Image (cartoon, rainbow over all chains, first blue to last red; front, side, top):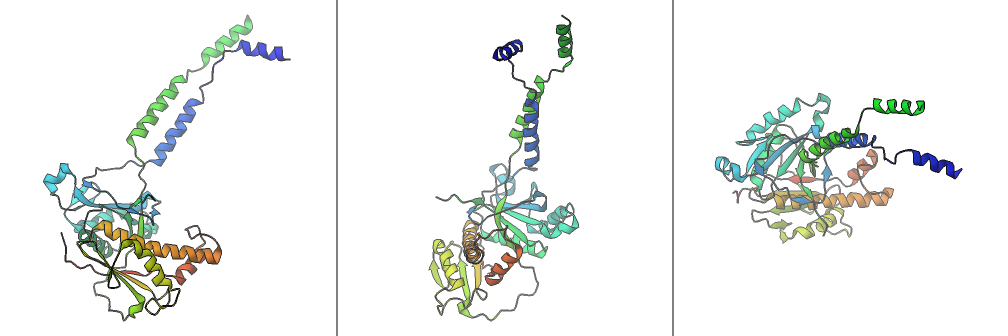
Length: 158
Length: 185
């Protein structure tokens, strides 16, 4: 019996089948394609969000719009100065007055039934003073965008 | 002889798929390099609706108000005394629950109001730190209440009516006043 098996093994070439390798790699590829979101637009401001502990994760990316507040990076400091500025999408805007239009542009992409779930994520640099943040908050309240998320990093428990 | 030939012809009919893996790897590495997983986390808040007319000054009993002021130098003033951020959470918790029935703390959790006021010159980092501590106070109280009543930790997985009951018992009332503007940059 055993000699019979031995003979058979000796006959075939000792190669590992790699036929399933592409399938595995494609699976990984699709996973990464689905999971990752290509970030559109470049960051023109330096934004280092502060740390906090009581964090909520924002689930649906399509329901979130982002407002950045920070100082322009060196490349843009010549044009925009060094004072804290607001960036909507990929543009630095003059002031909070541009926010309602920006919110409206995002809103039209979302089905009407889910408008109440739209969240604004404020990505604010830790060194910015509250004045500009307050102006943005007032503008958001005026445009009836009340769900707000102060973006923050998880604090490492030391 | 015949057997061998038939095997040979079958082998040559197969498409060589070994390069498929290379192509797929190339694509995979391209996506790995170009994309970044951006996970957005933060403190979720609900802003009050805007109204043109300033709200009527409510008549509040001073013992029910836990006022937190932050000035342009990022210093804290809690109920009229200078304080530290580290002690804020525990003081807020004691104020809300008032376990020893003190005269100067809130009458009941439902009547407790936390009032936060900052300056336009306050650092955002400090503001968020303070906000985080105050939210942590409520989160911990909700968790304790949930543990005592239902024996489970407070989380979003908890049934909605459980959460409603807990929040009805200890409502989060955090009012933010219009900031002062002494230290605008």
